Image 1 (tube, rainbow, N blue to C red):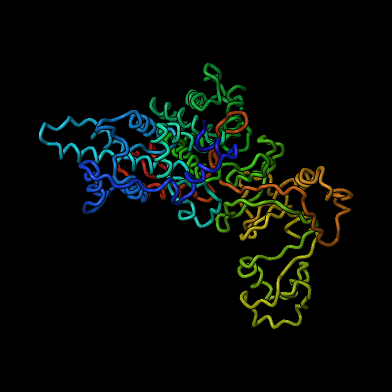
Image 2: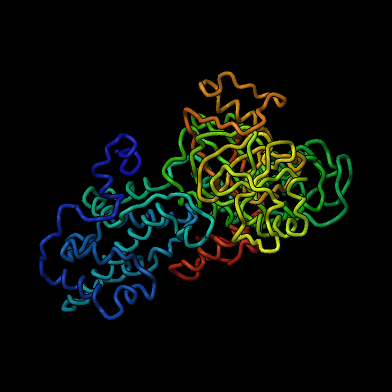
Length: 572
C-alpha cells in the first residue's frame, strides 16, 4: 500500500489528511505512565537548553516536544531498551540522503551511530543507561521529523529565500506521520514515499548518482584555451576534448580522432552545445570551452539545487499544462504527460525578473490593448512624456479614465504637475503592429500582471540569451498556441485568425477548458531523450539558493565548497 501518494490518488484521504495536515486528532494523548524510562525522556526534553544541548546546538524540530507529550514521554524506538528494526530502517534512509542532494549529517546520523556503538554501561549504572537510551530515542525521532519535513517542504522555505517565488508547495504534519510509521512498522517506506513523485525528479537523481561516481574517479579533463576550433582542423587539444566529450556522454568511447577535428567529434560538440543552450554549430569557441570546463563539482551542486526546487512544488503539475522554464527561455505544452508543442520565449531582464508562480489560463485576447505597468510608466515613459506630450499620440497611446471608459485628451493635462502617483488614468497603447503585445495575449489572472503574449519584435527569438522583457513572457509562435487552445472549443468556431482578419478592437475569447500554467526556473533537467541539460543561472537564483541552504545547515563539515562558482561536493 502506498502511504503518501497512492492514498491521495485513490481518494482515500480521510487518514492521510490527518497525516499531511497540521492539527490534533490522532486519537487523543496517551495517559502518562510514570516510570524511570519516561522520566529520562522528559528530563532530556526539559533540561536547561532543551534539545539544542542534546544535539550540540543543532536546531531541532518544533514538533518533537508535542510528539513525546502525546505519548506520555514513552520511548518511541527502543523496545525493552533494545534497538529494533525501525532504527535500522531509519539509519538506512538517512545514510542514503545524499541521493536526494541532502546531507546525512543534518539528521543527527553521526550522533545516532555514536550512541549505538557505545558499550553497555557496567552493572549498577542503570541511570546512565536510561539517559543514553532517552538521548538516542530523541535523536531518532528528531531525525525522522526533520527528514520528513525536508522531503515534503524542502530544506529552505522558498517564500523566505526569494521574493519572487510564489508556487504552492506540499505540507506535512511529521509528528503524526512518525506515529503512523512506528505503529505500522514501516519507517523506510513511509519516508521514501514522501519523495516528489514526478519522473523528472528521479531523472535528476539518477544523473546526480552518476556524476558523484565520476567525481570519485577524478574531475573532468580541462580543455585549454587556444584558437577557435573548426571542423577538419588539427589541434593539440583534441585528445583532451575527446576525453571530456566522452566523460559527459556526448561521444562514445573509442569514437573520434586525436589527429583532426573529425565529423564524430563535431557531432559530439553539437550535442554538448545543444544540452547547454548554446548554438549547435560544432565550432569550439570560448563560450563552448567555458561550458566544457565547468567543474564536475559545480554540476553536482547544480543538480542538488534543482532537486531542492522540485521539493517546493505541489504533488502534481497536472496531466495537461503549460510549462515555461525561465532559465531555458522555452514554453512547452504538455498533454497526457507528454510534450506536444514547444517554442522559444523571451523573459524578464535581471532587473525586472519574471516571477515563479502558477495560474490557470482562462481566456485569450485578440488585438489587445497594452496597459502600461506602473514601473514602466514611472521609470520609462513618464519622464519622456513630460518632456514631449505629443509622444503619446505619435506612439498610439491613449489615457483612459479610472472608470475604464472615458478617454482623456493629453492636451488638457498640466504635465508639470503629473507624477506616477497622481497619473490621471490608465495609460494604454492601441492595438496594431506598434503594440508590444503583438496580436494576442494569453491571460491567467495573477497579482504580478504577468502573462504570455505575441511580440512586435520577433528578432529577439534568434538570440541564445533571451531576457529582454519587463517580466511578461513573449512567445515565438502565438497562433500555434491559439490553435491548440481552441481546438474543439466552441469559442473558436467562426474565428478567422489570419493576420489581415484580426479585429480592430480587443476581442476576448474565453476557454471552455482552462489550462494550468506553471512559470518555473530550472537550470538542470533531463530531456525527453534522456540527456541532462544545464542552463546559465540568469537570475542568480542558484547562487541565492545555495546561500540559503548554507544558512539552513543543521550540521557542519559536510560541504566541500561553499559557492556554486567553485562547486560543492556531497551535501545539501
